[in-house]
Figure (tube, rainbow, N blue to C red):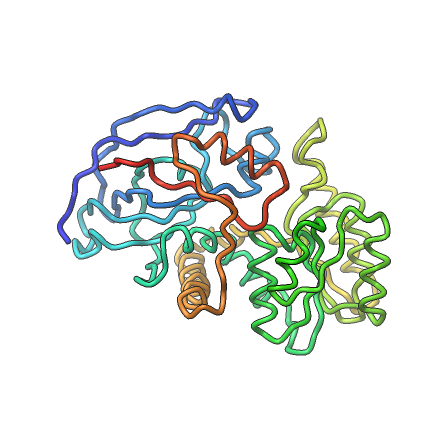
Length: 350
């Protein structure tokens, strides 16, 4: 395919701590890609828990307002800069950006692009861009759970949780997953044993299902309940904490819940019980940029191959056009959906 020059971009802007109706739309001129850069035209992006926290100013390392949110993107290269293979134009890639992807187009480093197989749709690839890497790395790089083991996935109906559950089942691991009862049938279809996360006896029921303890717990909630997650582990088990959802709607310093969690995990690692606790940080190791990029490319490529082969079933909760990003964010925040809310290009985009 030839190169199509994209000179402007429509962007969704988060101007400050606003309700979802307060998102703004703007159009700006894109700079020409510099050496090593491309222009990527968005085919699909999505709503992660990070954007929900950012709207409230509670994401641990978010930029100052105003900014364009959007943690990841799948798109088509339209323009290549100097020192970039022009054959990239017309091809589809995924990238993890942290911010900036709620836009019809953006300038990115070509080194951050990961090729999407032809047989995988943009929306399907979007569901595993950040969620798939997160799930893969937590399961295969942060733990050593083997086939025949048992894990607990809190929020197993969510974007990360549903992907993690499928990866674990593919590896021969038993999965106990928490979710609202409305999602239990879908979890059973994925091979997950569901437990109602609204039930005040949730942890007791998890213990009854695994009386000897579990090999790993994946906890995105944090807060006081993380201690109960720790107690579910057998000797040699691993707690992987990767969020503080419990503090999303609380007032106060957004960094304190994270810092308290870090301190608690560090303390537990000093205990002589054979268990370990880790905090998963997607961006860990980025100071060694080439190594970080190589690891991300390797892991996302593995996940995309599983999508292409049908082993991993993308969990798409709903699709919204970019101009209706506020409705997409509202649905994601409703906590009623299974999978990931996806944002796609507006109809009629050049």
